[in-house]
Image (cartoon, rainbow over the protein chains, first blue to last red):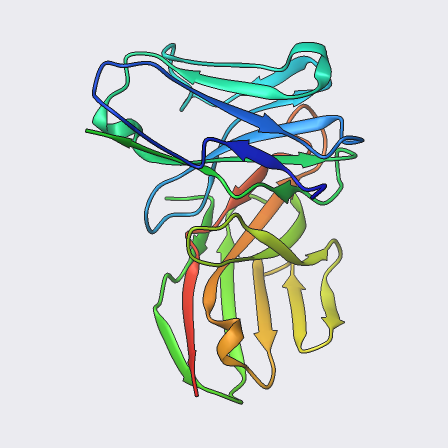
Length: 113
Length: 114
């Protein structure tokens, strides 16, 4: 499978715990995006990388959220001190060029109890 | 007011019907327009990608863009039960660091019943 891969697919955690999600993009894609989707809503942009550089962050990305893409390959999204409002599907996407098609992974679903 | 407005439905149609899905947007900086299909508990997959005003056809799907009215549509002909999914419109602004950042509509839930 050469698509975008996300891990874990589902994470259940208690409020206050830290969680980390991993995304492996399509290998030749230099752009990588993180989106968040809550029930009944469309995905909302969080941040994106071109190679290893984080070019933009949404105001939705509070200081509890941090994303990295070391060496321009896989990316991680960490949420510290999780809150119930963080419960959502976290989607990763990659593209080859800035106006190219975004290919999405199947998402990592977070449930905060 | 959201930048992209989409009627969430739900929309229920019989098999074989023509389906019309629509979005309006407020920011004229949006230049690229897409429709994604999302099955339950899956990531969105791209159906149509258009840039200019006018129609683009791909099989049973036709995407229509009217930049003057800030209105886009997706038509599905001869709808099938397998088309049952959430349909999301999405847009990209051209230029600057926002290039490539998608803004999505809320999504319309479509059910095609046999």
